[in-house]
Structure formats: C-alpha cells, structure tokens
Image (cartoon, rainbow, N blue to C red; front, side, top):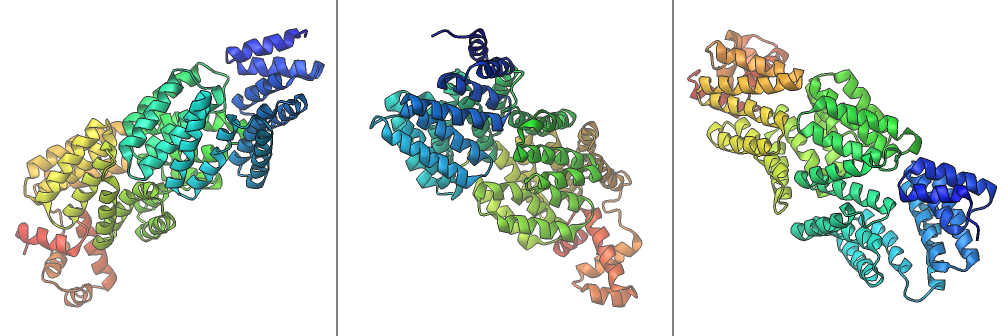
Length: 545
C-alpha cells in the first residue's frame, strides 16, 4: 500500500511528539484520502494533546468505525472506551455510559481473554470512587491489574494501580498506597506509557499527593511533570494542571509573584480546551495570593470567578471575610462548607481555617472540636504538613485558653515543621503566636525579637495585612507596656476579671451595651486572646487586678 507524504510526515511528527505538525499533516492527508484506523487514532491523539476535545472525539469515532469495518473488534472496543472517557470528562454521563456499553459489546465479540476487558473495568472503578466506596475501588483495580499483567499492558496497569493506591490511602493503609504511587510513577518517568496515560497519571497522582498532604512527593513529581511538558511545547492537554501544581508549590515556598504568574498562564494556555474545573482552580490560586497580599477586591473577584467555573472557593473566601472584619459571615461560610463535606481529606483542608475563624469569634468550643478532628485526620498519614497544621492549631487554641507555657512548646514545634517544609509565610505566622505567648509570660524582649523576625518575613512576602498586625503588636512591646490598653479598657477588663456580664459592666460604667462590646473586642485584639477566661488569666498574671 502506497503511503502519502503527508501521512509519513504525520507519523514522524507523532513519534517526536510534535503535535501541531502531526495534526496538520494527518488532517491534510485525511482530506486527500480517508485515513485508515491506525492513522485516525494518531490524529485523535494529536487533537487530544493540542487540547481539541471535539476533534479528538470525532476522530475516535471514525477510528472505531474503521476498526469495526476491518473486523478488529478489540481495537474498535478500545476506541469506544476512550470516546466514553471523553464524554465522562465533560460530565455527559449518559453519553459516556452509552460508549462504555458499546465498548463492552465489541470487546465481548473479540477473543475471550483480551486486555480490553481490563480497560472496561475502569468505569466501574471510577463509579466506586465517586461513591467513596474505597474497598470497591481497590477490588476492581486489582482485577484490572491482573489482566494488565497477563497482557503486559503498562497503560492499564498504571491507570488501575494508581487508583488502588488512592483507595489504600483513604482506607488508612497509607504506606501501602504511597508505595503503589511510587511504583506507578517509575513507569511514568521512564517513558513506558502512552502520552495520554502519562499525562493522566502524572496529574492524578500529584493531585492525590496534595490531597493527603504529601508535599514532598507532590513537589518531586511536579518537577518531573514540568520537564515532560517542556519537552512538548505545543501540548495543551495537561499543561494547565501542571501549572496549577507549580503555582501551589511556589505559593507554599513564598514565591507568590511566580505562583500568580503560573496561575494566570493556566487561563491563557487552556482557554481553547474548555476545561472549566482547571480554570476555576487557577482562579482560586490567584485569589489566595491576592488575599494574603491584602488586595481584597481582586481576591473577591478571583473567588467569584472560580465559583462561576465550578470550583468551590473555600476556605479562601471564608478567610477573606475574616480579614475584612466580617466575622459572622466567615463563621457561617466555613460551617456551611464543612457541613457539605463528608470526605475526610476535604475536611482536613477546611479545619485549620475553621479553627482560626472560631478563635476570632471567641467560640472556643467549636475551635476545640475542629482541632480534635484535625488531629484525628493526621494520625497515620505520615505528613509533615499535617503535623505542622496540627501543632500550630493546638498551640493557637491553648494560647486562646490562657495556657502560654503549653502553647509555646506546640508553637515552636510547628515553627520547626514549617521551616523544614520551606514555608516562610506559615513559619512567620507561628512566630507571631510565639511572640504573644512570650508576652503573656512577661518576656517582652523575646516577644520583640519574634515579632521583628516575623515582620521581616511578611515584608519580604508583601503580606500587608500581616505586617500591619505585627506593627500593632510590636508597639505594645516597644512602649514597655505588656497590654497597650487604654484606661477605659483596663476598667472593662477588671470588671470582666471579676466575673461581671457585659450588661452589668455597661450599667456600672454608664456605657451602652454596644460600647462595652467594642471595648471587649479591642481588649481581645490587643492581648492576643479570644475568650473572657484567657483575658482574665492575663489580667491576674499581669497584676492588672
């Protein structure tokens, strides 16, 4: 059979991952003379990698029919399977089910034991994952792995095994799950998988690592994914997810400007691929940087746009409300987000924000519950990031409860964990709390040193709200007063320490109830506490009563 020059050019471009050239050459050849099934698959692959899902689907359908006409039922089944995956990623469940059913029918018409039967276990596996039936995921994945091993199919094994790894982690068998992920990633980085499966597994495993706070692994595999993407500058399909992973890592390391740049690149690079969830995630990353920089209007717009693209902008939006002084709104928002989430991984991402908001609202009971749940979530996960969050949360709670000695030990441990993770913003936040504990213990010199170090970090990061907060705290220390309270605030504090209610204090000082509330709020802010009992403990310890 004579092969046209355009077909030869297209095949050569496919071999060198030159996706745009491959698409142009094969599409030209197809216009001249309809391509055979294998070249139609190549054309579908090029369309996929270029971020053209409609073209990808159309050429898959044609390849499916061509294989059917040629009597190659297993290959016809494989094309139908990937057509089903195309529809599933768009959220078109009925279309996906129809194509999976067709794939099953064609696979059944082929040899009794063919590898396509293994691929057709994957929809059931994904259905179990959607229902959070992790035992079901593990069982189905293991069946698919056995079929892959019999047929020496690296793609199928990787797709099944990395999902089983996720199931193992969710079932509490963390080390077993991590070993599976590492094994799969050896195949990925060695170039043993097809381009489509390579991209899918890269992004999926990195996302799973971030979900369970395995920051080191996520960073390592993101670096490898970045290298893979850079080798294919024309590729669009997996670039968006890669850039988001890079943005998250850069954010953690305090490189906020670079993180913002990567998030913006997502939106421009993948606009043509119509990937709304990825776009929403990128917008959320933008909002996180803007919030910490104090650019609240931009943060709000980014969160709203993320929601428009189907991405839940929490806990960022709740923390934005807290930073804006809208504590009541922040409380209701974070409680709603937690109430809607039954997944332990998702809740673990919300709980630190919940604790911070509850402490600001002086709800120590709810803060205690959030802290306890976060501590339970961290057990057995072998995550430095989770350990840091737990230590910081517990220290902040104990500080609010008026236990500076105990809090100080927790907070120093949290600071060490954040430093090991190379997370300068989080480390600086903890230093502020260490300073508050030192001040409560009467060591103003140590408090001043901690605040100065924290301010330097915040200033370098351009975290304006945190710089302003540190300056307020530092003025108290530099002035030589431990509390910085006005004469009227001292009067209110002494009445609080005597156990009197706000109503009684208002009557005795001839103030309105609202004025007493405002004084009390200022007292809590200046003392760095969040409860009447903690303020009372401070008052007695500082001999203000």
